Image (cartoon, rainbow, N blue to C red; front, side, top):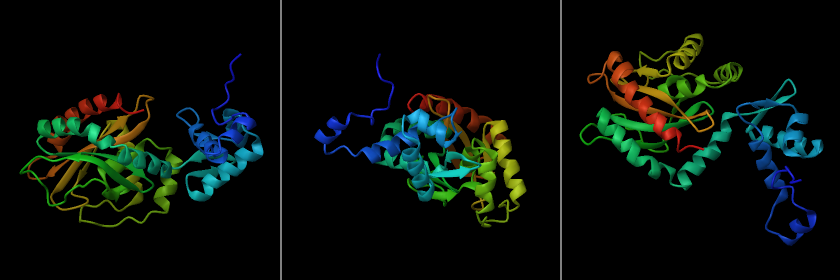
Amino acid sequence: MASSKPRYCRPIAEEKLNRNFVTAFARGLAVIQSFGAENRAMTLAQVAERTGMDRAVARRLLLTLVELGFARLHERRFELTTRVLRLAYSFLSSAGFGASLQPFLDQLARSIGETVSLAVLDEAEVVFVARSDIPGRRLSYVVTTGMRLPAFSSASGRVLLAYKPRVEVERLLARTRIVRHTRHTVMLKREILSLIVESKVKGYCINYEELEDGLVSVSVPVFNRAGLVVATLNASTSSARANREKLAGEFVSKLKGMAGELSSMLP
């Protein structure tokens, strides 16, 4: 019968022969990969069982992840934090993933006639990993690859936060300082939470001049093949060119159509 243990569980003799193989590092990666859609929070015993590790080893690895900010411990259950997405952002950047998405983003930008972008969540910020502009349609507030925006005050951030556990979002909001960028910026935390919940119900989020006067945007979630939200697809424009009705209608329809195509490309 074939062994179901993870790959890092090599025979000791083999590990000694392969001096380039770092068992501790492999085990740490195995712990991260043991979490998933149906295993968002696990006890030490559950992690040890899923990875095939001794509890003492699993405990040290989990507490290391907690210390580094990649995991948290709440009521004896461990769960990953949004900091893990930094690993995904590093991959997207180094692997040139943005380049493979570029033709799709260019097509969407031409269809909508405005700037479009792809963003991921990193703690209380969103990071833009790819974008496409329309010549002659540039905004004063230019979105660039690698640019960061406050998650709680942006459309993309609110969509990404909408698919996180409510308790996790509330904890993150409690330790986040909300900055007023314009007179339209929503400052009350209870209102921000309400907008986040609304984003999941509607399947999109509109940001109307909260980050800069005249700048409006709309975002929709991008799911991977496993059904998890891993990014947002966004369109930004001027309030003079698009009102709320146009953003919620034409823009959302085209964004969701393209988000569906991108989902098949995301592991």
